[in-house]
Length: 195
Image (tube, rainbow, N blue to C red; front, side, top):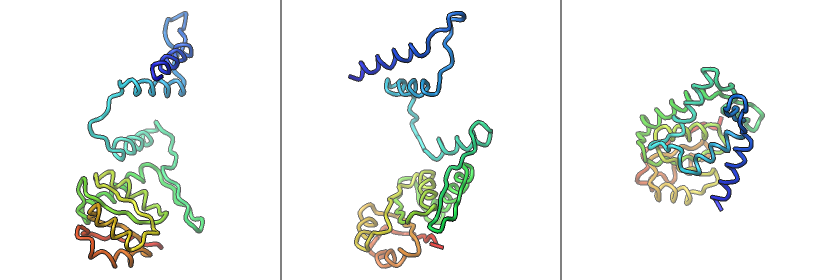
């Protein structure tokens, strides 16, 4: 089935490209043709796969550089609206800068190394996205949790994966404090203010 589909895709590409009769050269590819061609290269296994890949470095930082150089339009990397309608927008450059600061804090204050587990229990806050990118930068494994977790749930999620650190909000801090002694691997608790 895949070979048959590949044959159809390649035939469609050949028909769409055509050959410029006067010069014998292929005309430039349209965006959709580039997408299909890229998909074909990947599906045939010809796309080089990096040995080490980090989304924060290899995608966000590269896009940020392209934006700074004027090769990419400056669209918001994040656009967050709180419950009262206040908006926060930020560029890729701002996201990169803030996530690098957060990554330094995770590596310094929390002493998180690559492979260490960190639990993140925040409601719909902008900081959730920032910390997730910071975890990518440090190589820490983020364990996402929802704000509805009970003390029993929190205890399970701290003990089972042996979380070394937890980041939570003011409203969830009492629940975390109540069970933090039962998490032997838990070394650092960070609080994100709700206000």
